[in-house]
Amino acid sequence: MNKFTNLTKVIKEEFVFFLITTVLFLQNTIFSWRDWTFLNVLTFTTSSLFFSYLATSFCYLTKSKMVKCILYFMFTSLCLINIFLRFQFHTRISPNIIQLLIETNIQESIGFIETYLSNLFSIICFIGVGVLMFFVTYLERKKDILLFSKIKYLHKTLLTLTFLGIPSVCFSYFTLFRCKETVEVEQWVTKYQTSPMDNITNLVYSVYDVYLMKKDLEIAIESSLSIKEKAKIKNEPLTIILVIGESFNKYHSNIYGYYLNTNPKLSEEKKNGRLYAFTKVFSPYNLTSKAIKNMLSTNCIGNGENWADYPFFPSIFYRAGYNVDFWDNQYDPLSQNSFDFSLNSFLHNPIIKDLSYTRTNAHNYKLDHELINNYYSERQESNNNKNFIIFHLMGQHFLYYDRFLHNKEFDHYTTDSIKQNPSFLTPMSKKIIADYDNATRYNDSVVGMIINHYRTKNAILIYLSDHGEEIFDYQDRHGRSWERPIPKQVIKYQYEIPFLIWCSDIYKDKYPDIISNILSSTNKPFSSDNLCHVLFHLGHIETIYYKAERDLISPTYKCPRIIINDVVEYKNDDIH
Ligand SMILES: [Zn+2]
Image 1 (spheres, rainbow, N blue to C red):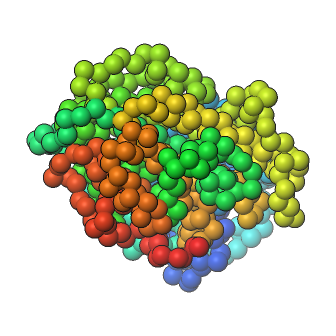
Image 2: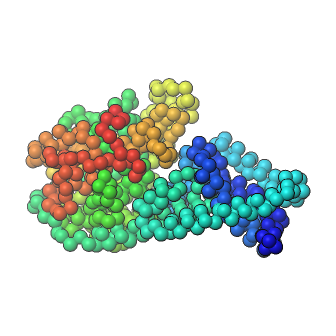
Image 3: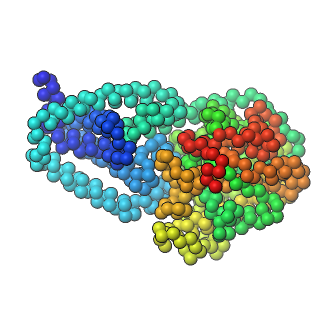
């Protein structure tokens, strides 16, 4: 009994700290009141009390004001970031957010701060933190003001509840750290943590998931090293160009029915019968890294295959005898803080580079046309005339205003050009839409520039975006979001992507069968993680990795399950 009294002393002496940190840890649970059940409220309250008790004991034992201030700062920041994410992006700290933080370079961070930290909500948050700090300092000085802290048995009750948290915390962490793959962590979330976790567990789980994804990288390299086969290819000159766009909302392209002529050059190609637009193509993720890893691997998400367990398909082209050039405008080799773990640590890993590319770019550029100019100024005529060229563009990545050339041609749309008029649109949001549409028009000219190099060659170009982007399409929001469950409108604007195939006249004359296959496939549903099969088909590559039933333009195509962000299965005509 005496020991129990000693343990309550920690709460008694540091009651203000104990109370405030418990509330900070419980923020996620409090804000997700819609998901409350008796059991999850009890679980997350007791685990918050447990973590708070640990921190309070540390303060109590060290008796250091500095330690206390640092802990207050850390826990308040954690809570504030969660609140900011909730109100701006309808999410909280998650593996995706941690991944985004790791991937973000200085330029993007400045853009982010400019966009979000200067708006009204952020100013309210800063004022809120100021008020909280004042309140905490006041309470710490005048502890006696909290009359309810003198309630008989209060401290003992709180300590009992803290002890109740121990089994659930032990169980959660034991089962979490038993997970050895990201897929298992997903299952752990679904099985044990469906309700909003306390802020500490949520942070630990997010970081651990990112750590496991880093391990995926090692597996992915091993998978590409394991390619033993040298695939057969036809001995004739052929150039295949893969252009990977960025954040392209296809409903902002006139090719897909938009009222502004944002794709004048590509529309002209379509009118002249050289360009084919596919209408039901999805990205399995709305996050660049996951979307492209799956796009460039030979896995199939619909069959439950993880991207890292299967070879990187540019390696198969390279091994088969193609010159593979990779010009990436999202890779900044000078940046120290972006690429420890992310898409780029995979795409530009030295082993992957050796296995997959003939040449890569040395620099990235502010604008995409500069990247393209750089490629064609440095291009060397290859010996065997079999080329596979990948361009990874900045496309329409926010900030949209920074994604196009500011001249008469591309400062084309203004707020007056934006004719849709739902009540939520302000002049400022119309300006953002006009910037996005200008960026799309500029992107059209970049793809047009590439096409112009191949008009008289045996060449074929595939254009697709990594994912979509919301641009005030149905509510007052632009960008991407990660809410669960995923609303249909989110799938439509953030996961549907443009998918275009352009063929030179020579290519069209040479392969009428392929053209007729393309023509009969434009309305079939497809997920971009199966892209490799279309490219093996177009590149006449005979490989064990080719699966005709996953190849969109094969007559025997049988659409695998289309899974959106690991949770939603797309059913035909769900959206249209
Ligand atoms: Zn992206």
